[in-house]
Structure formats: structure tokens, C-alpha cells
Image (tube, rainbow, N blue to C red; front, side, top):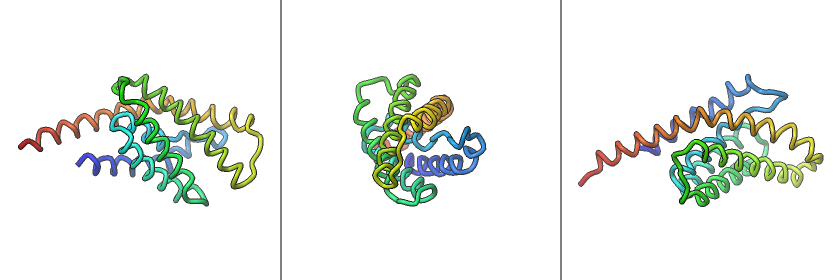
Length: 169
């Protein structure tokens, strides 16, 4: 049941990422709501669900935005698994943890995506990329964590309560 809800939420986030986020772009840079969703699910559910959601969200983003399918799929999957693996002993219900993990994931994602683009396309100029793209997206993502995290946390809590209530033997 909760996975169906996550599928619906991930579809809504994908639609939001591809439509409304285009209108709030600054210098062509938009927030990465899909990455925030992967981070929040990884924090709340662990590495396996983070990997699955990461692969799904990465595949959606690759199929819509990129000419090469696989780079976002790989990066989101690895980030989802890594965040879920690193956070079993910390306070997952804190928004501060979500902010730090989103910052970490945004930096890791952009550095790895830039590295893949160097290999595939021959881009150069990391300093310009860092200051223009990574810092702007980092600020955007931190702002949007305040909206995405409480929503997903609430859905996760209600879904878990529903499953516990209806799956008694």
C-alpha cells in the first residue's frame, strides 16, 4: 500500500519537476525536487527503498531530460542507497538531518554528474560550474526540503500506522 502511495507521489514530483520548476529557474538552474525525494525516502525507509526510489526517479529524469539513459539512474540509485546506509543510527525524524543529507546529496550528485559529462562530452571549467550550478541548486534544494520533508514524513507515518492497524493476525 505504501509503495503505491510512493509511486503516486513520485509521479507528482516528476510532473512538478518537469513543469512548474521551469518557471522558477534562475539562470537556467532549477531545484532538484526528485533528488530531495530520493534523500527523504532513503532517510525514512533505509538503503533498499532508497535504491529502488533512486533508480525509478533517475530513470524518469533520464528519459525526459537526458540524451543518455543511465547517468541519473545510476547516480540517484547510488545516492539513495548511500544515504540510507549512512543514516541508521541518527535521528531520521529531524528536518535538520534531512537538510544536511540533501546538501551532501546535491554536492555528490552534481560533482559526479559533472565528472560523467567530462567523460561523455568533454566539458571543462569546474570552478564556473561549481559557483553557478552547484551553489544555486544547493540553495534551492535546501529551501524545498522545508516543503518536501514534512509532507513525505507525514505520508510515511500515516502509511505505517495504516499498515500496522490492518495487518494484525
